[in-house]
Image (cartoon, rainbow, N blue to C red; front, side):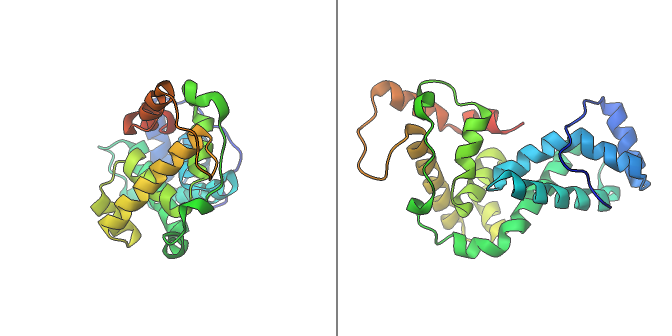
Length: 218
């Protein structure tokens, strides 16, 4: 099956979605293409969080959709389809990077690029701002950050998924949070000035899990 690229998600009722899923079960090509168009935006938002750029995200997305359509007969209709598809996209992203993770976990935090967001610490970061920061994290930190903060896995579960121990997962999450804070403040690698009270309060709000989920989960 050849998947489309560069499409936009298409609004659709739940009943229409279920009808399309049934068409996919029967391997109807028109239904497969419509499912892809309908959930493209949702799936891409997940892939973008795990990828370093849009090109990699597109590769993960197409691979994930292929797996979903190949295994769609296993979908339990009593559960939300988007959640089922989301897990497939997450697992596909992990598989995509798994061969590099052993090297990535030894990566030092200072090797990640700085992303300056200027005055955004005084206002609410938008989706594009925060996505750019997350994508610039070292691969290992980005993966653990997404699994724990956005997708809600425990450190034990993350360890099992990535082949690391829970302590390593916790350490990489801590480093991911620290790096995000550094980038939000626009700090250089040298010793920065201490932020004022207002900035500290804003950073504290931005770094809460609920805030990050609200922005990044689409």
